[in-house]
Each structure stands twice: as structure tokens, then as C-alpha cells.
Length: 326
Ligand code: ACO
Image 1 (cartoon, rainbow, N blue to C red):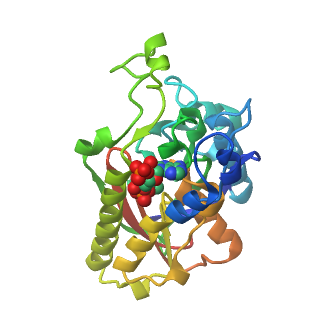
Image 2 (cartoon, rainbow, N blue to C red):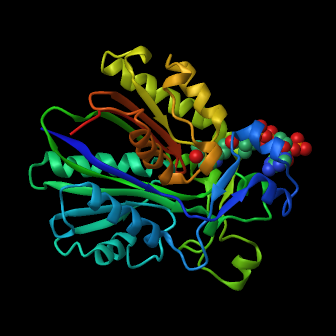
């Protein structure tokens, strides 16, 4: 028995922030951003919008597309590094908003690899035989931790995400996964302030410690190697080659990272999903957005072999092979 994805959804806020908009607030150019990253715009949450609002939209759409009603949902996992609050969890807010009265759940923090960690975790609950379904939502409101004075970081990220319902299946579903973590990379991509290490004070705010900081060059190197290594390894382990993959959905951090990973795995460009131009990096949101867009466009069909790969803060990274359908 496998866990398979029975419905998918995604959500991106209406408001957008284009490269041209950024040119007006920081020393950058549309040309620089496009050629170095592939990003043209990002979606940004509205004034009264938070992560749980986007997640609730996604959850309601998942229910609409599935045969389940809210009271049948057993588990909700929200993968995010930008929860509404430290407590309560965003999963609890979603549970209440959709009326999933029999569900329990929690938030999962694994940055850009969040949705892969979430799918793996949800799948194991289902494969245990105790649970019939799990709602996995991956999303982030990255604009809430962006320093719009720091051009090294703020051009890269946007808000949004997506989700999936996992159910039992005999024929389809998650075939294999490889998940990794190396905390020695923690310092290279970090929000230093606001947690127990450096609680918020007027000083931390003055020093802009509540915003995401990164060493872009180091992350770039690790991301190319990490994503390519786990993708190659999972293919080898399952006796597959790049030619056997029908669709490759990599985390969308930088088009150059994606191209390098696809090349190393021998996956031709027409099989690689790239939507970074539209959304930027939505952290835990990139993979579920790309999955749902591929379902809607008909690029991802029943029986297809789908390869997912991600790399992010932690460092965390991983890959997953899914036979699509349920
Ligand atoms: N606009 C214009 N110039 C810029 C900008 C900007 N937004 N940002 C940096 N520059 C400048 C730099 O200051 C530097 O100038 P200098 O040579 O005078 O010092 C120059 O551009 C080149 O900078 P590099 O850092 O060498 O540019 P690079 O080609 O490495 O690209 C980038 C930088 C895009 C950040 C790249 O390193 C990258 O994508 N790294 C990965 C970061 C990432 O994806 N983080 C997200 C989370 S992790 C994940 O999701 C995988």
C-alpha cells in the first residue's frame, strides 16, 4: 500500500512586485535579476493577509476537488517557516477555519525542503495503516521576513504555496524518497533574531536581525550540488535514468541552479517545470505550486513518473519519485 496524491491546489496573492517595482526601491535592475535568477515578479500578501489565510484558501480548494468533506480529514501538516505565530500552530488555525473537527496536526519547519519533508511524513502516517488521509500544505509569506533594503536577498523571494491530499493507493503514489539535513550550513541562511537565541528587542529591530540573511554564493554552490546529488542518487537507486522521468519539478530558487541539476541528471529541458519567473522563491510553496500548475495544464498525467527535488535552509535537501495518480 502506498500513499498517493488525490488532489492538489495552489494559491498566490493577487498583489505582485515586479523587477521594475524593485528598481524603484533598491539599487538593482530588471536585467540583473532576470539574468542571474530567472525571476520577473513575485506575489506578495495583502495588508490583512497572513500565512494561515493562504493556507485556508488552499485547504478549501483541496476539499472542493476531493471526495472528502472537512470532517473526514484526519491530519493537517503545514510546512512553513513563516507561521502566523510561534503559537498556536498555523495547522491549528487552518483546522478551525475549514471545520476539520476530527483532524490533528502541526507545523513543519524545513524551509525550501518543507513540502518534501511534509509529503514523506504524511505518507508514513498513511502507510502505517492507522490513517486514511492527510492534508499537506507547503507555503510561505517570505515578504514578512524580507529586508527590502538588502538587494542580495529581497529580489529572490515571494509569497504563496500549495497543497495536496494524500490517500491510500495500491497502484500509484510515492515510490521512494531521499531526505537529508546538515545543520553546519545553518549560518548561511538564517533569520538571526526573534527566536529564543536572540529575542526581539528594539536593538534587534534596529539591527534588522528579524530579516532573512544569506550568503548567496555559498548557498548557490551547496544547492547545485545537493539537488543534483540526491536526484542522481534516487534515480540510480531505483534503476531509472533521466529518460525515464516524465516530469521534473525542482525547487524554484534560481533558474541556474535548476538548469545545473537537470543537466547532471540527464533530464531534457522540456521535462523540467520552471515557473520562477512568475513567483520567485516561495520557499515551501514552490513545489506544490508547480505540481498543481502542471496538473491544470495537463503536463502531469496519470501514470507519469514525477521527480521532485529541493534544497533549502538548514541545510535541508531531498528528492522524491512519485508515480502520479491515485
Ligand atoms: N541587483 C544588482 N546587483 C546585485 C544584486 C541585485 N539584486 N544583488 C547582488 N548584486 C551585486 C553584488 O553586490 C555583486 O557586486 P560586486 O561584484 O560589485 O560585489 C554582483 O552583483 C555579483 O554578485 P554575486 O553574488 O557574484 O552574484 P551571483 O551571480 O552569485 O548571484 C545570487 C547572486 C542570485 C544571490 C546567487 O548567488 C544565488 O541565487 N544564490 C542562491 C541563493 C538562494 O537561492 N537563496 C534562497 C534560499 S536557498 C534555496 O532556496 C536554494
